[in-house]
Amino acid sequence: MIQSVNSIPAFDIKQQYATIQAEVSNAVLEVLSSGRYIGGPAVEGFEQKFAAYNAVSECVACNSGTDALYLALRALGIGAGDEVITTPFTFFATTEVISAVGATPVFVDIDATTFNLDVTQIAAAITPKTKAIIPVHLFGLPVDMTALMTIAQSHNLAVIEDCAQATGASWNDQKVGSIGHIGCFSFYPTKNLAGCGDGGAITTNDSEIAAKVRILREHGSKVRYIHEEIGVNSRLDAIQAVILQIKLRYLEIWNQQRQKIAAYYYQSLSQVSGIITPQELLGGVGVWNQYTIRVSSKERNGASSKYRDWVRTQLQEKDVSSMLYYPRPLHLQPVYENLGYQPGQLPVSEQACHEVISLPMFPELTQEQQDKVIDALKDCFS
Image (tube, rainbow, N blue to C red; front, top):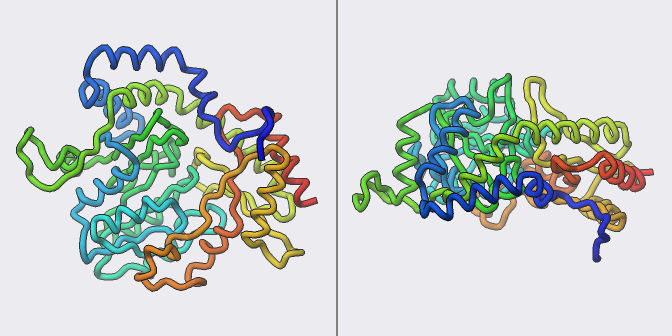
């Protein structure tokens, strides 16, 4: 189906670029003329500014959010025989890196209103092999880090925060990525702080962890051509670094616009029968990388993926785009069949995969466009 010119996209990165085009163009041209395309002052400057923004002492930029998670696990020495507790309701990269270092992901079910780890179930999943917890601040909503850190500290576990969708979110006035031992960020083009390509970073207050990550991201080398261990090539390029420095100055404004949009969605949809709206936990301030609802129907004896897909089709016919995050939980992915998880074992995550729809969400979304989204949804449930 061809969308009309008045269709509402799920996200629109071109509008954001248009507002800062001159700044970005000038900065990129300066990098091109400098000849310093990898590392150098541009990357170091971004690392310093991003560390300051998150109120941490260390930031190490890298090639992607996936690499940030991988480097974090490597820096902590997590590998074969170890277990890492995390959520089954997230993008595959979160657990892919656990497997990549030779460790085993252990899945804990989610909370139905935030889509984040149900912290009350973590303790029961801890074994003598458990070495770390990776909470994912999914869709930009922070996990209850007070409760999670209490559990982690009592069992001497490392905490790696997956902040890929949550740059700028906070828990009890503390930025995500500064609460656990390591924070991992993605600067993929659709994220709240977005580059014009791939990019990532880790944040920490542990100088030894930061030093380890710097070695690992440079082929395991601290001194050129002297390699202390097997590392990877994972560097943020200078062009992305200057773009991110510019965008970092606007991030708070853009996040506030996202919060305003989320509040209007909630006000307009929370009382609609058949729609379950997401909610922040008390103490958390979300930044709404996505606004993800769940759909259900009493007439259909509960929601199913077929019903959810029907709703998405109805929205598409009204020129309203939506996204599906995520259609299958990680514990039921083919690659993890060997772990022995069975359907029904993590019921909240599995139900969410049948019910979720992510609505249009980007800072430049107008109220008129939101009203069109809301009216189209209400028509589905009238």
